[in-house]
Image (cartoon, rainbow, N blue to C red; front, side, top):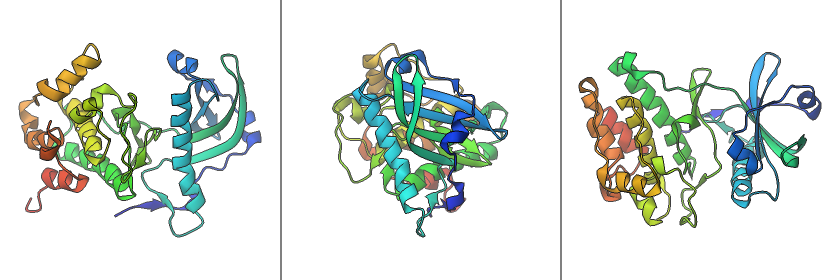
Length: 285
């Protein structure tokens, strides 16, 4: 079932509010060269993030930012009807004409504001199996809602999941696309760490590539270590041939679950989040 939030969960900043705030630069140096700016600020004892992108600096970054703005804007446009905002989104606001002067790239316009939130992935070494399973299910529910809504994320990473007021939410929709849209990769628009084997052969992203990326996120969390590779070719070799699921003895219960998410052949991989959840908690459990 798709869960939705009420319209009042849209943020309601005005330009005067923002100009009175102290915007603290948090952009990575490399992102700055692409025209991206990321700020954090505090307003009425609450913390927020503001993201903006310079025009005519980097075509790919600009396209991604505009895609994310459009993703959020659809819910603003629909919020007057019974189709309220999905529960997997943080409180947000799209500001179409926000401008800020940056020493690096000059004038920027349009911005996205999100409420601050923390990671839902605690240290699983100190968690019970039941607590781990609850966390996995909360994250799966978020992706299930997104897919039911007709979208794939197409760039899932652990840092794209956040916990806000006891609710897991999803962020960073720059690569998001409609489920029914077939879009072959013309350039690398995914992170090699999370790429399904078929993406290295330039096939289209789909529900199953989201499932594979989520499987990598879960595997790294449960195993307590990150996968490593030196370069793109090494990542391709890891995902297409070398990846083997190794878990601590007390977590071996999750191996079948991960194997279904991380099957190298997509014909053997779970085809829906519902199937993933059924494996995690069988109906007769």
